[in-house]
Amino acid sequence: MQLTQNSAIPARTPGKKSPAAPAFPSSRYFQIHFEYLHEIIGGLQLHLAETNQRMAVLQQRLDALADHGERDAAQP
Image 1 (tube, helix red, strand yellow):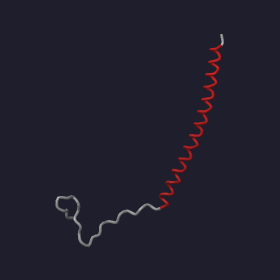
Image 2 (cartoon, helix red, strand yellow):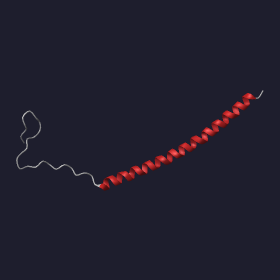
Image 3 (cartoon, one colour):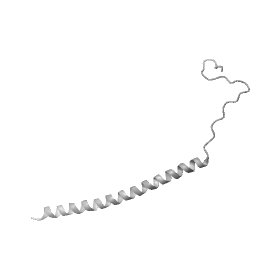
Image 4 (tube, rainbow, N blue to C red):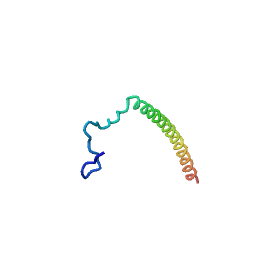
């Protein structure tokens, strides 16, 4: 293999073709990964909805405790 001057790039040899670039991944490759991502995102959305519901319940309980505390403090 010959090197071009002042370079580490191999010189082209007449008659030899450079290796072909790897083929672009098939559509099935992308379909599998998009299905996986869709499944993961769906699960995350479920967990987020559950978390939001729990936060709403906790906020109601906190508000109720705060109201109860204010009433106790207002009584002589």
